[in-house]
Image (cartoon, rainbow, N blue to C red; front, top):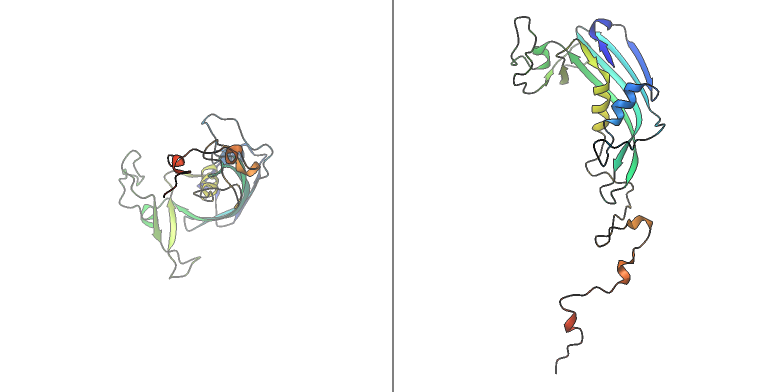
Length: 209
């Protein structure tokens, strides 16, 4: 879903999407964890709500919004799939001015456009904008190499940032048995009933005089 900069003015543009929009489903599914790259295991009927507000303030695109959805993750303890709810607040700034975005050092052509394929360095920078923020506040402005904003990429990125480094299906997850691989959340396995042999078992009946 692309929003072209020429469509944005200083008047707020309000957008609303749900899981019925194909690009929304694709954006969320890019974050879903799968056992295999081409796995078809997805969340059916996943409830998703995306609301955004965009406006152009002196060639700086101000985006705010909220995303409510669920992603499919793999538990880091028991290796089972589970659904992780995400409630996200979006607040971002975009512009095509390399100096304002802090990327003025990047190679550009005679029209001022960044030359793709060259070392890009950091695509984000810090600048100040007096119209909407205080003088003490540093702003993170994303540089736009194109004349549009890809909402699908933004939604995917914002949801991906919510994924825990070590996701757990539940705080009390017992994981799996290191011997037989059974899911201990479903109950104790039979390994505890099997007498384990130890190199020191021959000393069990050893007696000293």
